[in-house]
Length: 121
Image (tube, rainbow, N blue to C red):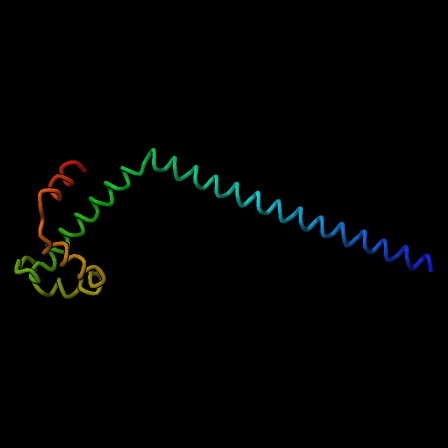
């Protein structure tokens, strides 16, 4: 009978050890997660301090060139025929996703603040 009690207490000791080990792993996982979040935040701060402005300017330049390309190819939608329709129709499947936003941006009214943003940026 004492042998069975010893086994039960041994099992309790093992289960409590396992519970402590699980809690320890959970704490470790939490601390690793916090460290990853901290590292990600640090990397974003460094990115913002170093190259964010350059990336923003490059994206603006790319958008400007995209607008010019679409204007040259599909200018007839705005009344500016430049290329023959054959080439426009060959390029149409590649341009369809951006066509609606391009048309809105080209026909949008521009004011003084837009001009200042272009000059400063």
